[in-house]
Length: 80
Image (cartoon, rainbow, N blue to C red; front, side):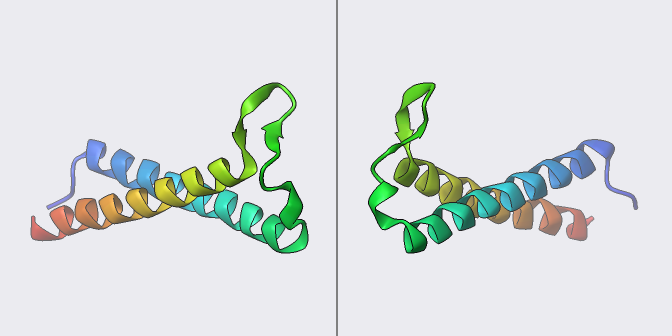
């Protein structure tokens, strides 16, 4: 039986969040290796918050949570 369209949309959304969150974290991790003194600086000149380190943490949490939820969504489709 085919999963409903909302399930496919949820899969695509969660995969996108997992991927882009990981890419954001990887960028900050690479930046921390090459320029460790900039982690406390603000991420953009438009706002005083978030800092690079805050952005990296948020990206990691979003990526991990989205991937974890994606596995639940996929497992739910496999049960049908």
